[in-house]
Image (cartoon, rainbow, N blue to C red; front, top):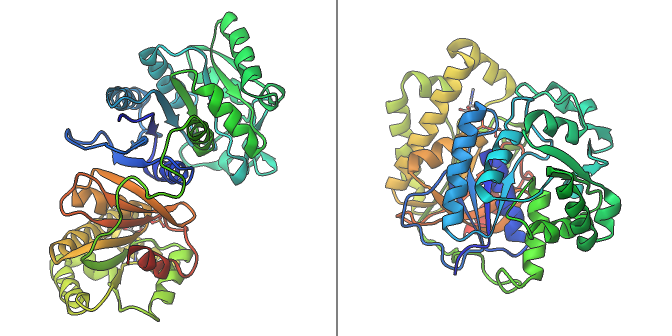
Length: 425
Ligand code: ADP
């Protein structure tokens, strides 16, 4: 059986968010880090999300990486490709959404491509092509000050028009509310006018399935997790996906040591570490020692962990308060200290796995990325949700098999570590 939905995500966290959304909607989903090595078995999988880091790189590189991912997904049998972008349409006039869309559209010989970052459940709605973040226009939201992609225009027909070579149209809410047939009719009119891509409105959750149903007629669509949800619902309605309530892509039972590594310095993670101290051994590493004497510091940390691992989980944290972080950054440099601490966390992850850990919880987006890269993991089957946006993951095509929970800093409630441990045992 081949996959029905292939997704190309322009960043890692967005990829996980989409994979989580697809899984919750009933599609058995695998997430890969870039194009996985040959030999990854994709049996009993409905959707694959290839995670790229292409949102803010030069457009030509984003195009090349996305085309390669699209070709790989198509070779796995994907009948429809979703180019997953941010729900706030993060991009500049130089790209990368327009150039990637144009290239994928040419490769897929697609007709009018539907484009929407809408995800009403999370406050992203599009009306007459205009993107609202909660109750404010995109260009009046905090996104106007984004360090990499400041968004100064909420009219996505215009925004995409500046990035794309193709003519951009609009499918308005009236057509969406009237259902898939009305959307199809509007798309035929737009095609006759030479339009190559159309921003499509969505204000209510129920709009997403109508959009997903119409989008599946074509070979490519562009959007955020909301469109992913619409496509997943449409695919489920068409009979794809696991039997409701059945297990996700790969069985989740894995035995072996359990450890957590925290590198996030977010308020949420700091509180979660404090809470964890009441039910598991916690080691707080000195960032200065990690940077100036990594070998000895990591060796001591590993010895400490080994003394507990046979009896239960451990948590090792580099995380510090904002004042502590400022001090470290002043002494060692902002980027240099961040990279050094991430790399130390990644070495620790590898040492823990060598010591028998098979279930690993990691707090921090960059920290997770560094650990996953260091462990050489290239694909995950996506399991049940531990906390909003944080699914339980099982490695696919990787020895030894492992369970992971990768948490971006601010995600999860105060009891996140307890919930993650529960999900893994
Ligand atoms: P988040 O998801 O909260 O942004 P990340 O892992 O992405 O977490 O980023 C946290 C960054 O802070 C990483 O680069 C990590 O190496 C760094 N870091 C971790 N602990 C400390 C510390 N005590 N002082 C300074 N930087 C730290």
